[in-house]
Amino acid sequence: MTAPGAGANRATWLAAVGVFVAVLVAAGLGYLIGSSGGDTGPTTGETTTTTTAAPDDPATSTTTIAPDIAESTTSTTTTTTTTEAPPPLLTVVATHPDIVDITDTYERFVLPINEGRAADAFETLGPAITRNNTPAAWASGQETSFLHEVTIVAVSDINPDTRNVRITFRSTQDGEFGRLPGETCTLWDITHTLVRSDPESGPLWLINRSSQNEGSPQTC
Image 1 (cartoon, helix red, strand yellow):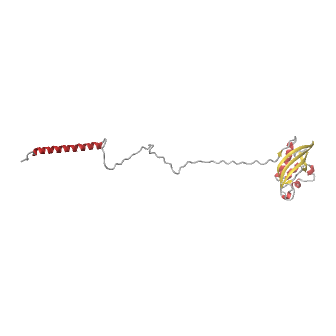
Image 2 (tube, helix red, strand yellow):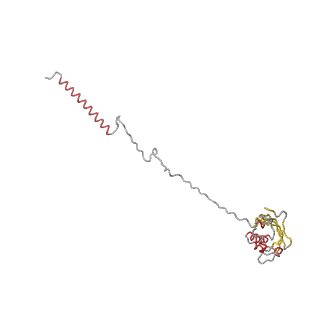
Image 3 (tube, helix red, strand yellow):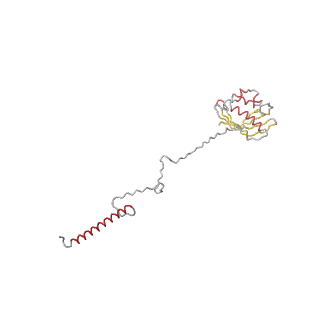
């Protein structure tokens, strides 16, 4: 026998269960739909986010310089070698119509002495010197001499065939050939008397006599 109201109560209970099940099914479908796409609700647990930047993204680009590559500077040093010209054999200060021929005489006189062949300078000497002399004897006193800074200072006429020539120079020589014993350097200021010759190949003017000017010679 069924208690009064039992059928009605059972029907009410069954209806309530049906509604509860419907709610659970609807909630499950909603969760599945949210997981497959679209917005999702709050979730619990750890979340890991990975961001990959494009290779040319300026925010993440890095320039790496190899430590063994550095800017190289090449320095070129130019060395200039300057070769000094040898001093002139003669300096000519004087002016005279015969200066070219007179200079030729002194070039023929100085160069052989400086080259150690003084006998060749004998051709520039006039008769007053050569008359009682020989090239070898005259050259023996000049064999260690060297004439420096030879300067033709002045030329003057004595007569048509005679000229006075003032020259200055410095000579160096071994002490045994010095003006004074042991003198190796001497300053000279000399007036030569030159005479005209009639040469076939030698100099036109010959050194015939020599006299010292005031204050000459001096030790240097």
